[in-house]
Image (cartoon, rainbow, N blue to C red; front, side):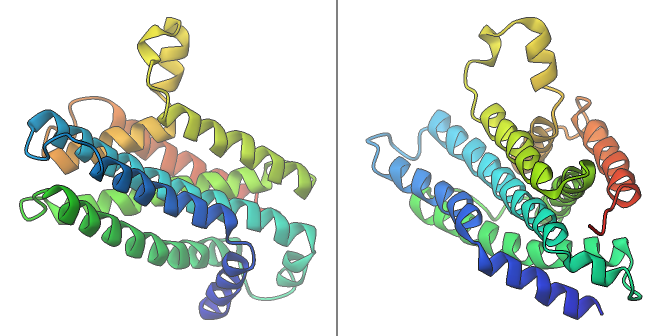
Length: 241
């Protein structure tokens, strides 16, 4: 049953790959552009910029994959595919877990390629990283974005409206993660931006990547709260059509 659902998610991913390919290709383009700079890779500040960039790119990749999954789920509602599942033993949790399994595989391949390319281009030391922690957090971050996507895809009655909402939610978070002048914004907007899932994810993964204090701030707690709350909501509001 799970295997069949994984194949279905794969078909959807291959059917409309534009968003996913764009999201996964962008980080590589950025890295190659950095490689053309005249800055010396050994410079500590430059290495820190690259380190931060790698983490941001992995979070964006996880989010884009979940954005695509959210859009495709709304599409499955629209074509009445999920209505047929209602008469089968398939439960909402089965559908959600199978999508996570497929997309995590894609994310692992992407993240591995990105890290290897970055290490070759910028001589980043990847041997001293706590890979068990980094991988665990990346999977947790992906799960957070995935259940968020499922909630968004089921939040509205009409599937078409849910697809539009996914662009607003995930597109808005991409704007947030690329916003460079946050300190110049009004205080209440800064508070909102610093308490968004993408900010939690980036800060937590960066702390693990650099080996700094993972629990120094509230980001990890905020991320765990998002996983639990959005996970419950994604199951509760699951719609078959």
